[in-house]
Length: 398
Image 1 (spheres, one colour):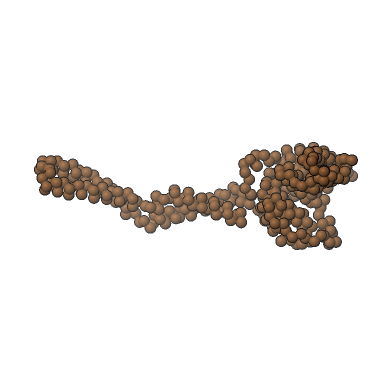
Image 2 (image 1 turned 60 degrees about the vertical axis):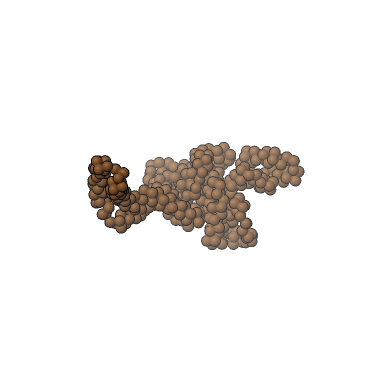
């Protein structure tokens, strides 16, 4: 719907502009011809009026002769101008109009081709203020790094170091860097994993597959604490241009729309993902949750509540990698935090955010949210009870 509306408006604006530019060619030279003929006819009328005045005795013979000489001079000049414009008048009007139509068609085609080559038709509109306030990947990673605990040492660290050393001697080893990115993600070293996957995409260039680009975006989202940076969004755009139906790419693009303040557009993507299924896909529950939140933010009617997961659904969810599950959790927590910061919400949502941040190990951020929630509901005993319960569950209060 949005794409159709954009192309309709853009087409009308382009047609209006070309119409103004090509109007003289469409009209041809008829207007100039009419002006020259009008001058000749007017001077001839003046000659007839001169004869009438001489006949009535208004003018003497000498006055009439002098006036006739002056009028005749103007008549000769007007006739010369009419003759000079005659070639333009003989140009085929039909040919001029065909040339105008051809020029308009070529102009529209060139404009569309230029936009498809340089623009991003699938990218949603973003106000300048929103774009200016969005931090880049480096800034988001720095902020998220201060809020999450450092990853604990693992037995795989030595193997990762050996792999790094080997890759230093093989700068063109794409598969080795893919393995490095996966290994770093498994140990939750998200910024390093993203950097390794960025090297994969850079080495592949235009040959990068949609999954490579989605992996880069996903690791960027993880490294940024659930935030979809402009760099991750650009990777998603490239991936969806290659494979518009990629499930994870569509999910994360909907997450980006939610963060950009377009829950209505995100709801459409979530709805299409849910319809495409399959119903036992491991990411369906995350899509349902995203669709419900998008509907709430957009003021849309909530979708019917689906039945709880059965044993098969639980087994399917286990098929998600740790990184995929973590990325979806991070994204949903980021959505909830952004909504509460912008428009507030009931105490249950604040309590859920506090518990979620505690589960993710972001105690400092959970403590800040707890203080803000207690301040917001300082006069509501029932709300404070729910918030304090979440604080106790998270180990932040008595």
